[in-house]
Length: 118
Image (cartoon, rainbow, N blue to C red):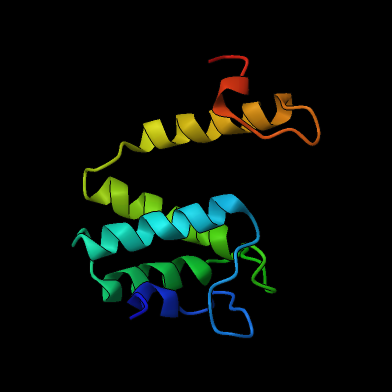
């Protein structure tokens, strides 16, 4: 039986009804969210409300192209509010991944080890 999260509002779907991910990181964020939900960290209703709020914030892409950015922002908010993650640690990791991406030659996999400040 599919997770309730796979029925999330606006989740891009294939013609067969399965989720479609624009990049591997989006699939990983989805999988982490499903895992946390299935382990009782949060209820699906709570997730849906928080994700909907994030999706409807001013400045969000009308075409839904930032859907998984909203997904990650919602996941981060939940993890911080539950005391599972630290907001500054999440921000530091985001910055580190950005530096790694900028330092990675085109066509090569982006690895956190590529961050010149790590």
